[in-house]
Length: 290
Image (cartoon, rainbow, N blue to C red; front, side, top):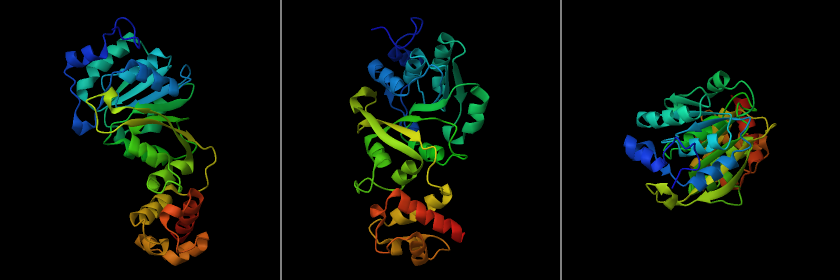
């Protein structure tokens, strides 16, 4: 079956993988997505694309890359650590002249604002990616903690394992999934799960299903120092079953009871009961003490 997500000059992805010997590496968190309907659906979820520059992390052989370009992305910046995939991505670049920039390197070491400044001359920058499982959460936290804010991207459309997606969008009403990641993400963005992707759609198939998550930056999030919020949430959820008067003792050089009093929070509450504004109030109080 011809690959509808790319020009006729490009062979189907499965042929590309065989040609270049691209067996997915577990050490790189790789799971390749060949289903054209799904890659096109993900690309459409990141739209409109015609004026956008898309940053894609971990493109692998380029299934989603093809879909983004075929659906009209003005430019795609693909960041790939696996040198084996670079030749396959080069073939896509040749089929879409001037629209695909390939960056060989570690996504965790990229200076994203500088990268976007170099490649984006007009239109918004946006991140759309099937993130490698082993670095997805770390990358997300890096982007959420971007300074200045509003950030260099106008939206994040990302694939995570379903359990991670549920932790991103969780509220105190979902105590099993509510934690530090939910607080950080919902402090600065509006989050929602768009749709699920079954494990069987990937090669090799992971043990769990995945989900596409959209994170839209808030123009005016509650004022807060990101480092203080990270410290407070780490301490609070590090002992989530304990009352905050106990768990916040893990904060260095801080008096838990004084922090709670200053933030207007009852010492007997637990981390899973506190909403985002409550954690922001705690972080503000902690920042004032340091």
